[in-house]
Image (cartoon, rainbow, N blue to C red; front, side):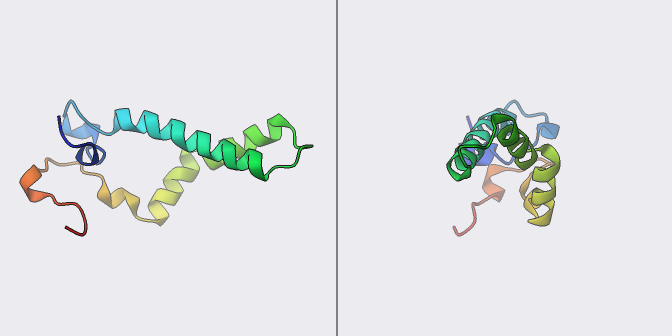
Length: 93
């Protein structure tokens, strides 16, 4: 089993058994929970549940997240070709 950080950057395109898809499911849940928590804390009591659901949907939509990823160049960190453990070091090491 590879370290979780290493696994987080492996694309399913590599054909590896371990890749970021299982972590993606956990990340989606955490992102949605934090988003809802912040929205509830910031909302007024008279805000309807439907309004909060629409806001949350817009905040965590694939379109918005992919746009943020592109704007912040996060996509450059995803590995789509084979990478040997000896060739990779985390930043700042």
